[in-house]
Length: 384
Image (cartoon, rainbow, N blue to C red; front, side, top):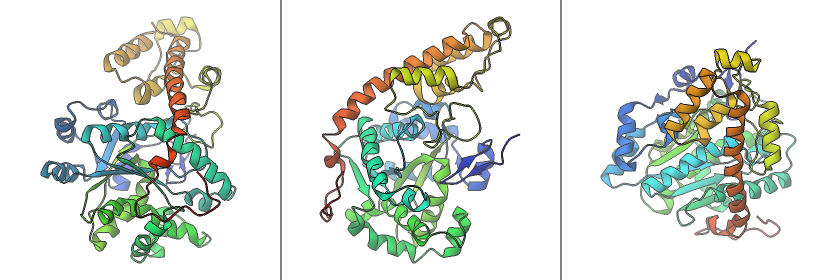
């Protein structure tokens, strides 16, 4: 039996109905006309756009209007550290890097290190800080431009952010937070205030540069409630509403409802060894194949529910022709389940081999990514 669909910034369960989310969240499905406008500037569309992995947004045409007037937008996304990075986390960041490269723009990457500490009872502050450092390595390893990428850490940059967060907080009532996030009177007061801090990077560059700049936030659709509140508040403070572009969820290996999550045992992490990847895919990845080889060759598989194929479609294979051939061959029974899994294992391990090299190299560059201008010194005893 399918669980009831729940999509919040802290919980994603059930059979995800994206058309329903579009209506409930009030986002706009990305249409062909908008894709053509993007392509005019990027020369080609990222495969995540072509395949509707990034499928919805807010005010994308406004962003393009401003860009065409010469008012460059900036990117804002982030990571609340609470565990290691898995493939599902990488999906929106890989797309964000493409946007940075194609539009030649700055990225402000927030690490709200208090968020999961406030919302997860079993997460100690010190543990969250260790996760944050490890998460930074994964993000740097993706190849973001260090001259145009600024890490903002809530606890470290509090002197820069807190005053602005207070201005946001004054415009948000407790009832607004409760209705947006589903929290109740038992929530700790930090969790009630937190979304004010998450709003700040959407207008912080405008403050620093003393110019009203458009903001585009690439993110998975479960984070939308934070930015709905932000969009309501920022015009009251004299800033543009942040635009957004939103993606679907990479499914968990099991193929069950929801999304790949750090809390699930069988996710694929960026630090996994080739043998670990092979074991996880072969043993746990949900297949759209038939029970026997004979049946599969006769009837064929169902790539639309096959998790390894979905990983190819959403993240690992950027060549449309190759993907289409795999789809046809699997559906016709020409490619067996084990052969499809082998393709995916090789793709993941090829990617992770390079990523892990770059991740190790990233240890030398963490400090250069952390925003320094107008920032008070890091308190003693806190290291990254």
